[in-house]
Amino acid sequence: MKFSRACLFPLLALAACATDTASDVSGDYEELDTTTVIDTPSPTAGAYFPADRDTLDRGAYMVRLLGCGSCHTDGAFEGAPDLERALAGSNTGIAFTNPLGDELPGIVYPANITPDEATGIGRWSEQQIGDAIRSGIGRHGGRRIPTMPWQGYSGLSDDDVAAMVAYLRSITAVSHEVPVEVSPGQSAVDPYVYFGVYRSKR
Image (cartoon, rainbow, N blue to C red; front, side, top):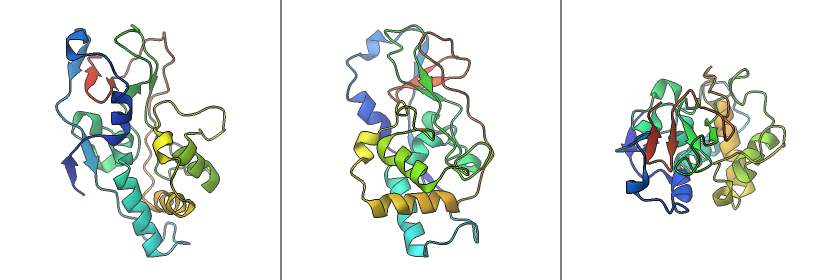
């Protein structure tokens, strides 16, 4: 697998809403030099092949094109992705409230989207995975996932979503539990990024 330096699409949607400048960043944050787009892992032979190879290739293409690995791979925010955990979630979170205005922002840690049954999406239905991609709805439908750029994905065709679901079910399951979401006003133990540019020094 390879990775290249590129703009991180999902976080650019958040960055477009930012009005803060670099001079506003306090000493609690450090500026990151790079983000990454990560090649998708190959399907595991025999793991999930009700779909044909063309469908899996299409799903892999869509997952890479949409930059899923850039959020859902540990180390990717810092420009050093752990390729042994590609798509297995991130120990670095994303602030979903403004940490420059809120001393203790809300933070979500991108989920493990490999088919691991305990820590990933192995027990999710195809409908649940599709709803998370296209509508940002969590497994139990309680609310939308903070920072998931579902608005940009809402126009995906049924065939594209089905291909992505088939592909995500076909890759190697990786056991990796990510930190739990931090509500606004609570202190975070694990690091997080803000607009994909600044990382907390925790």
